Length: 327
Image 1 (cartoon, rainbow, N blue to C red):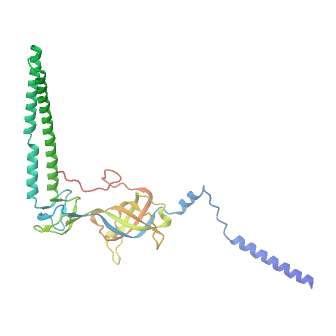
Image 2 (image 1 turned 90 degrees about the vertical axis):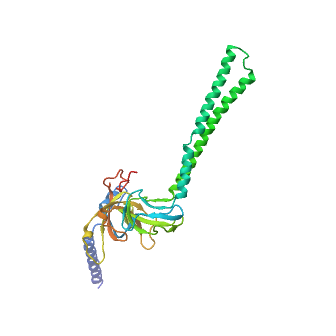
Image 3 (image 1 turned 90 degrees about the horizontal axis):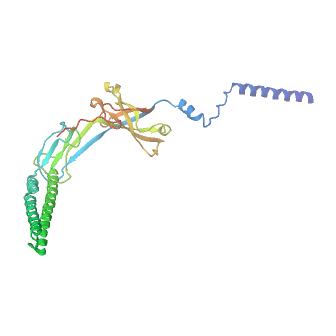
């Protein structure tokens, strides 16, 4: 009886060991331990070459409201909605007759140099009289007394000071002319950027106050694409990294969805979203043919480590802009 019981136990234990050994053989080998030397290479091999950012939003970068710099009545507003404008082009003007008259007066005052020329002549005469007195005393000592020579020298010095004072007065007149010119310039509204007029707030003949909006101008040469990158990927992205953007139009297929727009990362937020572990990023994209529009949705692919140099840009940090119009 005892022999039978011991045999049963031994058989059971042996069977268990065989099952454990077979299971152990079928299991995968344990992953190698990651060290400081192998981590960067292993991580780089495990990560994809790109980072995809879905549900991005397209927005304008260059949108400016041009406002009145001086209150008054609008003499004219040059453009309507849809008109193209050039950089520094005249858009509107507040009636400036009084300011123009003030500038003309200040300009005439500045250009008047009669006092300077008279002071120069007076100084030349006073100097000649003093030098003549010195020569007379050298030829015949005592011709002019010491007091008389001091009086002649003082007249010369006074004439020089009058000339200096006249020059200072002319400098002040020049500053007043510049002030009047700046005041006159506040009546003019110029385009700070080249672009398209999208809204006109005031018309010719309407009254405006300082700071009232006149027109809106937008430039669509470049657009901002914003999206959210998972926190696990944000450490791979740097400002300047190349991006490719494609439009995504919900519930409709359009040929523009197959066009790629190139750009680069310009901003990475410093905070993480509370709802999801994501970080917001901005990219500036060249808007070829004006296809991208404000408010559109898109998909963006980021190429970490690759840079994008905008064509025809003066530096790598500048996007191509409309040429400046020479005055």
